Length: 223
Image (cartoon, rainbow, N blue to C red):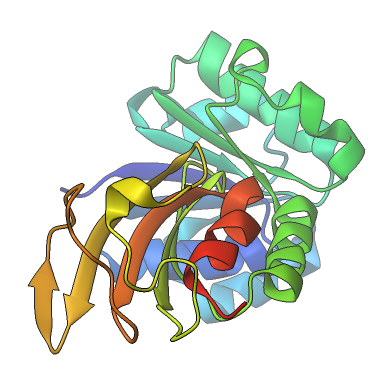
């Protein structure tokens, strides 16, 4: 289903987002307040998708069709702009889904549903956590991020000397916020039960909280 989306901010993030949405056949208006940048955007995106002005201007938002928009993405380079645009979208125009970019991590506490933001994207925080994970989780491979990065779908091969090797699932001291989703053995998928015995070289898929990745790695990985 094609969505009506308004993107506030025509920087690299907004431009790339708009291009992806347009390629997916969605209806997009991207608002940028720098005139020169607008001219450049019109060479990269459909001319009628680019609107010059401020994303915090209610009249301009209305001209862009915000009353019919299903999503507003506030991805400008300043948190003030993103918060004001989000508040207008949610409280003034009743946009169902408001997504906002957090530029400064110290401002993240303001990007909440009470402040009109349904989903806050904190790039600096996400990048920092990804780097920290790569430094501490051994051979675990992250396949998918869930719930804004709080949880991950991960994969790890059971090491020959792992704590888990030769043990039933029920015997393992898995992290509290962790569930084993599948075991792949010899090309066959096994749904793990309490009495499933893990063997060396089994590929284990698990959903785990980001803060407990290292604990899971200690159970499945090399000692």
